[in-house]
Length: 161
Image 1 (cartoon, rainbow, N blue to C red):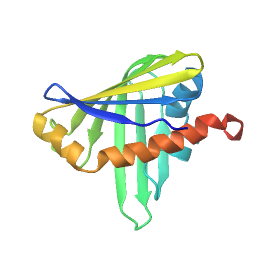
Image 2: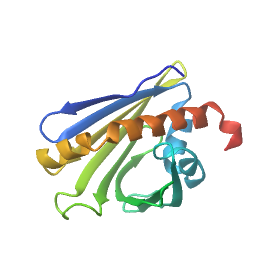
Image 3: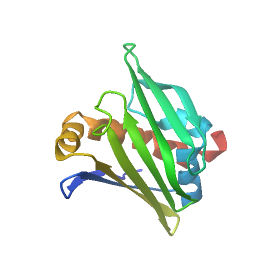
């Protein structure tokens, strides 16, 4: 693998994450949009995806419930705003732990393939600088990095899908 996740601030409200994968973008896109694949990689080590629903259409919802080994759960959910397979996904995400307006974030993913390597870029725009900074300070980078490492393993062994 040998590919690292890059996480940076962009402007006052955004987090920019980039990671490359040794796989075609159709496979990386599928790994984001097919429950049987999402269950295999989403979340940090020690977390299990115990609920995964994906209604892949504009206006359709996605919902993931993660359970940590200690029993703590986290719910992530969103509504698809744009779908351009296999190039782009945009969803409005909500976090049950935040106030309604500030707890929403617009996540834009782009998948660019060059010579069999897909670069995934995810831009997440939060409702405030305070929320964006709190997300960065939460350890999100470690969790996303571990999830993306598992994603790299999933797309490297698609026959197991």
